[in-house]
View 1: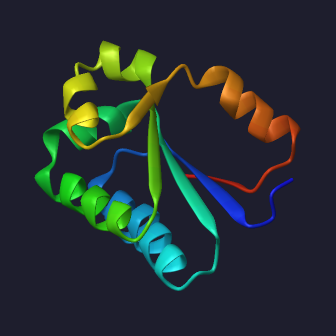
View 2: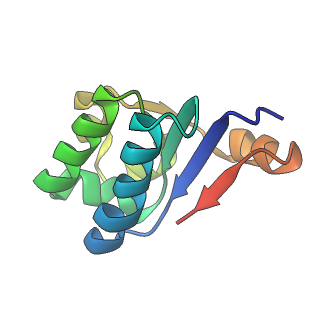
Length: 113
């Protein structure tokens, strides 16, 4: 278990929850060095939110600047026509089922929103 890494599984596509929980916490926790590594996994409807919401894209860029890493589910990106938008933000796309299962089985620090 990596005690200095937090993974945030972001599935809630509500813009207010995204801005005032996911990004507020990820950005500030990384900036304040509360965690050495923070990764946000974009999964499900959040993939479409990133594509459709300029403010969310700006929050991703701001978070990336302080070192928050973003990855995304490629199946969701393809299904929701958001692959190009995610790639334009330099977000890595993967099949996420196995990596998420490994995080859970290894009892890694996982916050689900």
